[in-house]
Length: 70
Image 1 (tube, helix red, strand yellow):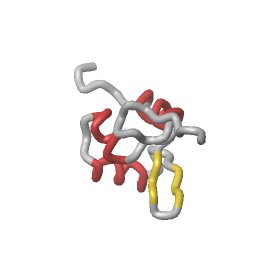
Image 2: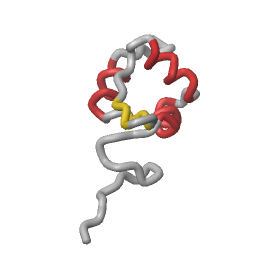
Image 3: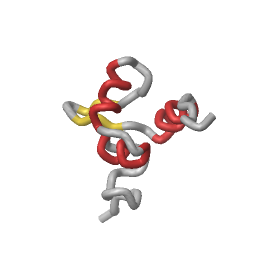
C-alpha cells in the first residue's frame, strides 16, 4: 500500500494548504483570507466544499504583499 506524502503542517497533502494553515503562515485571520479570496486576490482550488490553496498561488499572492515597514 502506498502512503500519501504529506507536509509537516497538520499533515495536509503536498501541493495544497487549508485556510487555517495559510492564515497561520501569514499571521492573519481565516476571515481575512476569505475576504482576499472573495476579492479575487488569492486563488483557491475547491473540491466540493473544501477550499485549498496551492503553494504556487500562495507564492504569487505573498509576492504582491507589501511590508508595513517599507
